[in-house]
Image (cartoon, rainbow, N blue to C red; front, side):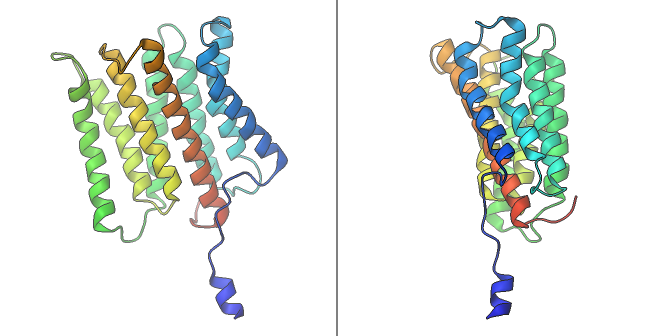
Length: 235
């Protein structure tokens, strides 16, 4: 009986194990939910700070004790996302913000590929291939005819490559749902860049932000829970 107990997998614990980690998560939730409703009313500095806090606090929570040394990867991924949020909010820094996100996706792919499933099933491999195909096609599909999409396609492939790497990894499926929400958010963002909206501009903006923040939140919860449960090894 002892040997059976010793091989039983550690149950996933989604929330941080310490009070400070939970406080950071709560503050992140407050900032993430509040941002769209205060955007434009706090001045450029205040709006930018509030926008960056949502994911920035998740990066700090990832570094709390108990997540293991591999959590430095997650913290770096989230920190680059928070940097992208800040830069995108500042005039003239759109490409710098997109670059921060792109670097974050590259770091994420390195992290997730190092923790790949030894033998992914056919459905998983097909899903990963489908994500890459979507990354190639999406900018063409949602942009007006004649729009140059080279840079958008590069970013889109990196974004979908991140989601595909997470799908192929041993990390919890909750994180994969987060990555898919991230893909949805950036699809909506690229649509907005081309002038296509799913409703009034404010509603479209809410859809972009909340699908993005929810995606980052689920990535944080899923990946950090996987690290804590010992589902993956290595730094």
